[in-house]
Amino acid sequence: MSLLLPDSGLLFWMTLVFLVVFFILWKWGFPSIIKMVNERKEYIDESLAKAEEANLRLANIQKQGEELLMEAREKQAQILREASETRDTIVGQAQEKARDESARILSEAKAEIESQKQAAIRDIRSQVAELSVQIAEKILHKELSGSAEQTQLINSLLDEVASSNGTESK
Image (cartoon, rainbow, N blue to C red; front, side, top):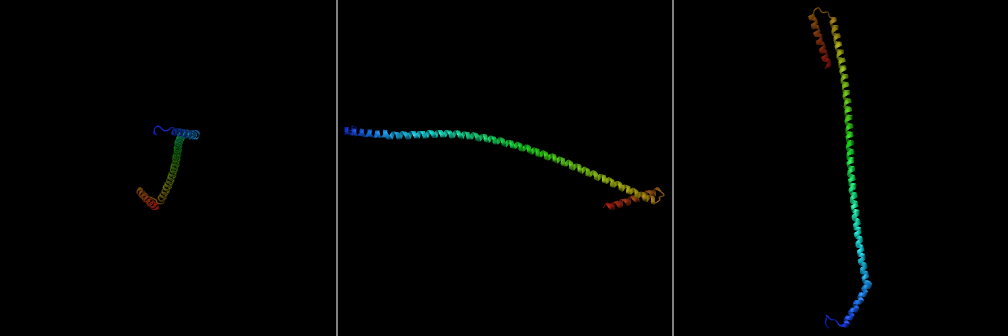
């Protein structure tokens, strides 16, 4: 027997075994294999659909994130503008208050200076009047015969007054 040409009995049994195996595969094997292939195909299709849906959701989330970021930047700019306006208002109010306070202090100082000036003038006038009265008293108490004596008396009285005022102020 040659290997390339089998016997008719061997050929019969080989054909019979082939048909039995083919029938078993046809009846139970191929449907299981086809079912598993179809399930695998459905799983892959579902996975692709889920991946596409996830990509769409990710794109939406990114878009929403960008919108939120833009909104946050706008709010930040608005808050900065409001803070700047508030700062300017507060600084302006503080400057106005400082100007008012300095004007009030200046007017009080001017009034105080004027008051002290008037008091000094009154004091000087009273001292001049007192000195005049003292000089007149002394002149009247002493009778003077000549103008040289009068000049000498006035000078001595002025020296007296100056020395008495010098000791009082010290």
